[in-house]
Every structure is written in C-alpha cells, then in structure tokens.
Length: 348
Image 1 (tube, rainbow, N blue to C red):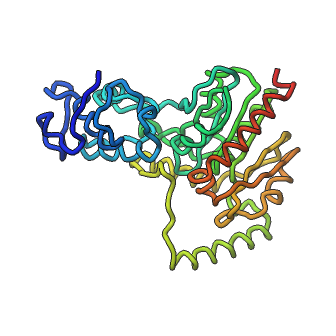
Image 2 (image 1 turned 60 degrees about the vertical axis):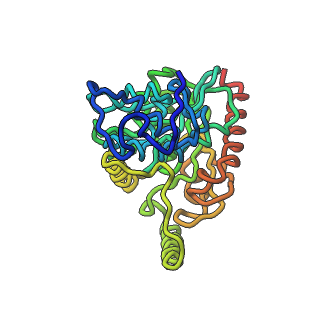
Image 3 (image 1 turned 120 degrees about the vertical axis):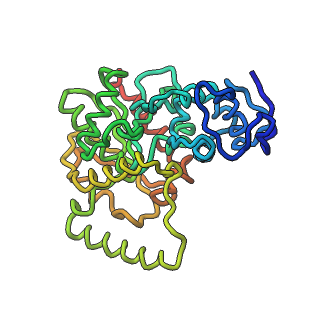
C-alpha cells in the first residue's frame, strides 16, 4: 500500500497538523497519523506503509526528528531507537497503538549477515545503539552486527548502576543467541569497560574471546595513576577555560533524553565512578581518538599494565567525532580487526 499526501498539510486526512491523541477505537488509524510525519521527515511525496525507514533514506538524525514529531503529535515520548524494532509505518503504528508501554529488546540487529559468529557492540554513556547506525553500515563483514541496549531505556526496568551488572545483563542476552564462543566484542567509551568485563567473565568460564576492541574507553580518573590524574586534570581545566569563549558541548545524536533515558545516563555515570578495571589475561585492541581532550592522552600507560597483550591505533577526530564524523575510518579499522579474527585458525 502506498499513500501520497502533501507533507505540508495534514488537513486532507481530516485532522489539524498540531496535535492529536489517537485511541484504538478512534476513526482515524495510527497509520494515517504517521504517514504525513514520515513524509515530512524523509522529504518524500509518498511513502509505502510497509517501506523500511532506512531503505527510504532514513538515518539516526532523521529518526531523532521522526520521534520528536511523534511526541508532539501523539503526546508520547518514545526513544528513537524504537525505529529498529519497527522500521515500517505499519509496524510502528502497531507498537504505538498498544495500550501497554513498549519493552525494548536487549539486543538490536544493526546489520544482517549470513555468517557466524555475530559481532556485538556496546554503546557509550548516555547513548543508545542508534549511535552505531553509520558505523555498522560501513563495517565490511558478512557477519551480523548487534547493538547491546542498556537496561531501563524503556522505563520498565530500573537501570543498572554497576559495570559488572551491565556485563552480566548483556552476557545473558548474548548467550541466548550464541551459547558458545568464539565471541566478538566491541565497546565504545563506557561500553568499552562493559565489553572488557564481559570478556573477563567469558574467559574465566573457558570461553574464547576472538576480539575485544575498546573504542576510546577509559576508567574514571580516580583509577588512573597520580601522574595521569594530574595531566588529565590540567588538560580538562584548560579545556573548560577555552570553552567559555567557544561552542558548547554537543551531545551524541541519540541524546534526546526521555525521563527513562536520563535515569539510564545517571546510573551509567555512577557505574563509571565505581568500576576499577582488573588485569585481563588476553588481548585488547584499543582505538583512540586523535584529538584527546576529556580523556587520558596515553592509552598505553593506562591499559598496557592491565592486559596480557595490548595494541593501540589512532583514528581521526575527538571522542565524539570518531563516531559521528569519522565513522568510515573507524569502520575500516574494525573491518580489519574482524578479518584478522576470522582468519585466525583458532576461530574454527
């Protein structure tokens, strides 16, 4: 079914473009409400109710805009990551018409693939799996790529306040999909610490971790050496002074916080302050941002003493830019990491 409605006006549907509250018994269906919103956001004159949002040109930024408009029209605050659960108007309408709150899956398929094992990505503090949208599309691999979503994003469960609990939560979900190794883990920022803790637990249980890649992830400053603390505190102070006359900090694309998402962020900040990394008896592949401002500038000094093997590589951008702007460079590095892991004879 394909419907064509002027993106500039909703009056052809019989209701004003400002706000409506749609109930299941209402004359107008949720599909009719969503069609003009999709048209406006995607800048299309017509959309099919079963067309995939991403196939129509949608991306993480447009998903944010889409759900902001849905919130204004239907008075429902729903995180943009919902688009991965419902990529079509038909599917999204069905979710929105449910009388109960939406429960988010802990694993979100970001990119399909025919080969096994899957690749698992852990997002950073205050983010969602939406932050991996562009990165996942650029990673060259025939293996499926999943994003691991933090508990509590849907507002139905209390968010976790310890990295150890986050790691176990994700492991429980992963084992339902992949009971045995080898495992491929990638974590960005705080997600790097979560991936590290997951690898610790898998290794302790005799499972093989074929790849542990940490993307610009560091422990809280309190767990750095005294010299590292002084250098980082000095650089952060200079950055704050410089920022007084510059542009304000820009959060990640997904950072349009519902109350539930803000609670998840607050809990994640607490978890970061509590987590002291311990020695990992395996290899860490570390990717650092070229521009270091809010984090230590020497990843080797931080992590090499805490791993049996440690390799570091630098990609363009700062902590946010390496994901939001320079995702192609980062994807190229991760593609090579995956290829090396798959080529390892021990993967068989």
